[in-house]
Length: 137
Image 1 (cartoon, rainbow, N blue to C red):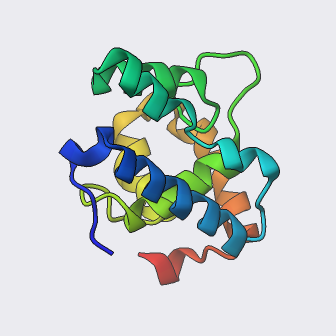
Image 2 (tube, rainbow, N blue to C red):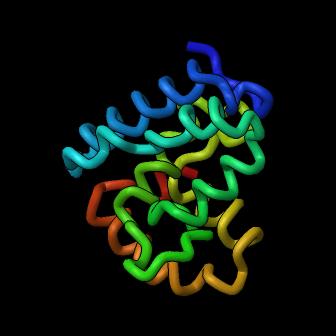
């Protein structure tokens, strides 16, 4: 399997590969839920409608609980967040990291104001899921 470039992220093949990787990772971690069948479901439709990946990406991040940028009232979905981080290495050339590395290399840098709050929730959960910090760095 080849990894997708940043330019490929707006394509249907990328979305499908990411959807498969996300669901596979959830199954491997034994935390799969039926709602994961709809993970990022709106992205290919919005791309078809808007034809502007940056606009789709912004909307997606603000409206989905597995992203730090989520602006809704329900709060973050930490399990889905961890799954998304853990599976990115299977599809994204620009993000070859697991969940631990994403927390430290991306979230800490890109979201310094939310980092401690997110870390407080995801670190115990990653340990519980068997994502060993020492093995994954």
